[in-house]
Image 1 (cartoon, helix red, strand yellow):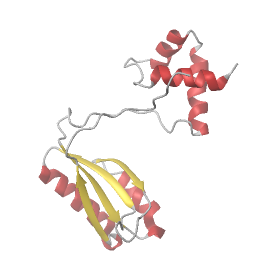
Image 2 (cartoon, helix red, strand yellow; image 1 turned 45 degrees about the vertical axis):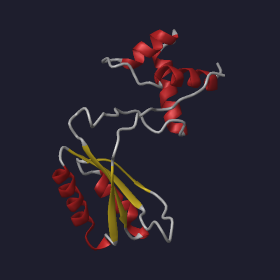
Image 3 (spheres, helix red, strand yellow; image 1 turned 90 degrees about the vertical axis):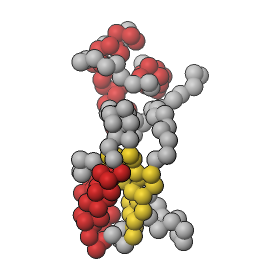
Length: 160
């Protein structure tokens, strides 16, 4: 069996999302006329190979009432970025947190964390919490507020 072609077929079938049912892999398998065990094994193989990073829900924060969103950016010592990023990423109000390269001299920030709130004040308090958590490791920070909603999409492939 050509797993590369099968994997692309599975990705094309699911690129707009998994079916919102209790057993989505069974629905995908039925649609592709494949055993569910094979579909699940291919997802596992794609994840292990790095072809896909994760399978997860992508909430629309705006529709959930979280209309204030800010990408916080932090300048922290590189030797502490992993432990600090781990702590920030565990905060309930942080949807994602990651390390990015600095672009000196204009961009000193190396740690990014997206926060969401129902008010500007709520987001401000979240930023204060991150700053307190970072303590003296917070060399400087800023926040880039969302000004519009962008359509979120996953992998998109073009038919061969």
